[in-house]
Amino acid sequence: MKETKSNQKLTITLKTIFGLEQVLSEELIELGFAKPEVLNRAVQVRGAWKDVYFLNLHVRCAIAVLVRVDSFYIRDEDDLYKKCKRIDWPSYFDLDKTFAVKGAVFSDLFNHSQYPFFVVKDAIVDKFRDEMGDRPDVNVKRPQVLFDVYINKNEVIISLNTSGAPLFQRGYREATGDAPLNEVMAAGMIRLSGWDRKSTFVDPFCGSGTLLIEAALLAAGLPSQIERQHYAFKNFKNYDAEVW
Image 1 (cartoon, helix red, strand yellow):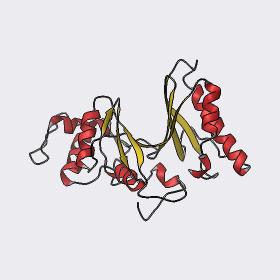
Image 2 (image 1 turned 180 degrees about the vertical axis):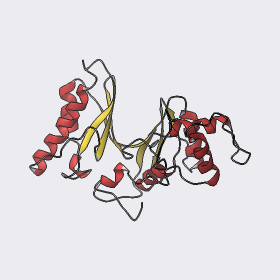
Image 3 (image 1 turned 90 degrees about the horizontal axis):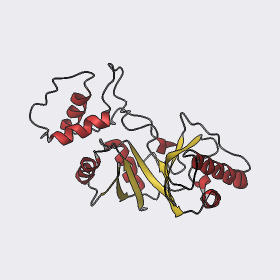
C-alpha cells in the first residue's frame, strides 16, 4: 500500500440499492469494465487503483466503491481476532487518521451482529500498538478511513471503503425540498426507464429536481460527482494526487 501500484489487480465491489444491480452492471460495461459480476446489492469488477479513483468520480448507480483487503474463513470470534491481527493495517493508513469498522453480519457464530466489528477494531488497534507503540482514534460518525466487514456464516470479507460518505452525496446540492429522492436511486430509475439521453426528459412530479439534474448530467456526459471534493481514498497511505 505504500506505493500506488497503479497496475496492481484489485477486487473492487460496488455497493448499490436492491434492484439496481443490473443497471449498475450495464453502466460498468459502458465505462469499460468487462464482465462485471452481479451480486446481491452489489456488482464486482477487477481493476487497479486508478480504476478505483475513476469509479468514485464517474459511477452514478453505486453507493460506495470497496477494495478487498482480505478474505478468510473462521471457526469462532477468537479466530476472527487472530486472522485480523495478521493483516498489515498500518500499511493502509497513518496514526493521525481516524477510522471505523462497519458492515453486515449473517452468521450464527455471533450473538450480536455488531460484536464482530468491535473484534476487528481491537485487532487493528492492537496491531498498531505492537508495531508503532501507539494507536489511531476511532470516529464512528465521520471516520477518515472506513473498513467494511462482511460475514456470511463462517466466511469473512474485509474491504476498504474508498468512497467514505455515500456516493449519493454528490456535492452539487446546496439546498433540498422535503424528502428528496436519493441521487443513486434517481440515476438508476433513469436507466431503468430506457431514456435515450437525446429526447426531451420530463418529470411531471418534480420536487427537488433530482431526476432532472441526474438526467442533465448524464446527457451532457458530466460525472455526477463533478462537484464532490471528499473521498476516503485521499486519506490512504497510497493516495496518489497525480493519478487522481
